[in-house]
Length: 153
Image (cartoon, rainbow, N blue to C red):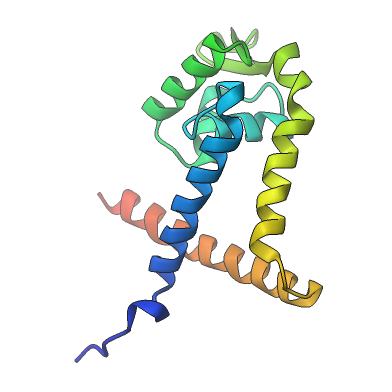
C-alpha cells in the first residue's frame, strides 16, 4: 500500500510552482525585448556558447525540435539570431547571436541573476550550495528516467 503524501511534501508540486512563477517572471521582464518564454532558454544557451547547431540547442534546452525551430524563428524575426549552414556539413544549421543580442546580454543576464537572488533570499551560502547540489541531482534523476523511457519506446 502506498503512503499518502500531502501536497506540501510533493517535490513535483513545488518544482511545478517554481517553474510557473519563473515563466511569469521572465515573460514580464523580457517582454519589452520581444523575448518570450519559448525563446529565452535558446538565447541563454547561445550566450554560453555562440554558434551551436540547432540540434545541440534542442538537446541543451531539453525541448523538442519543433519548439526549437519556432523559438529560433521568433528570435530571427526579432533580430537576435541568424542561422547559417555549417561549412563542413551542409545538413547542419548553426545559430549565431547578432549585435542586437550582444547589446542586451548584460540586461538579459541581470534578469536571471535577480531571479536567483529572489529565490535564495534568506539562505546562507552553505544552504545555497546544498540546494543547488540537490537540484542538480534531481535533474539528473529526472533526465535519466525520461531518457530511459524514450529509449524503451
